[in-house]
Length: 265
Image 1 (cartoon, rainbow, N blue to C red):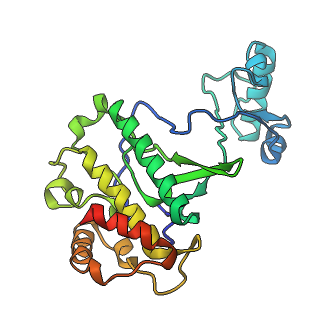
Image 2: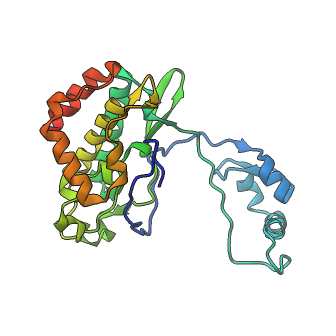
Image 3: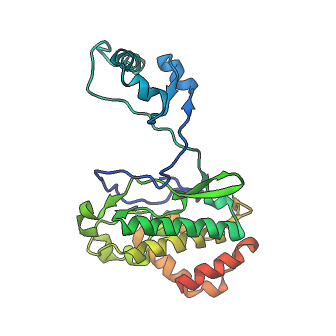
């Protein structure tokens, strides 16, 4: 997995769930005329919505069969004329911006809104499974930044969470209690405060590695956290906490860094 950290970070195996979720539950669905899709199947493609064009087309089996047939041909599938029970779905979502582009109070407000959204999901038995830098995103509308908790690939529900013992996440942002040997062996039940700590590590990461919305090109702190396994990362994070008073954030992040350290310390 490649995050907005500027390097690859270790990630635990996927937790397969019967359900997928989206925190951005009210997008304005619009028609999409994709050049790529048009070249493949020679027809405009639309996001499926209750009011959208495909909703009407879906009532006409002749049109539906024709689109399916062209899709199978474009994919090089044999027996394209033959009807298939497999339905090809293409999901198009709003383009999201990384939260790392923000600074000051705007960053803090966007981060806190995602924390609160996550809390709501947790109270409704939804476990995100990977609170990490690349999954805190958003978009602008009318000058406001709308926060989005993204990427529910590792999500699960309380009912199918295998008693909360399976460890998922991106290592540098995982709670210290989730990267100890007992947790690595899946013997620690996942709790809300584990995810809360992950949010604080994300905020800390931004304050130390980003300036004016961009990843520092040199002298970046915490790079080594991306190159080690969970056990070594635990050692490095513990060492960091022992000398946190000696570490200075970027100037625009000083206030937010102080808040993050109050929570961690």
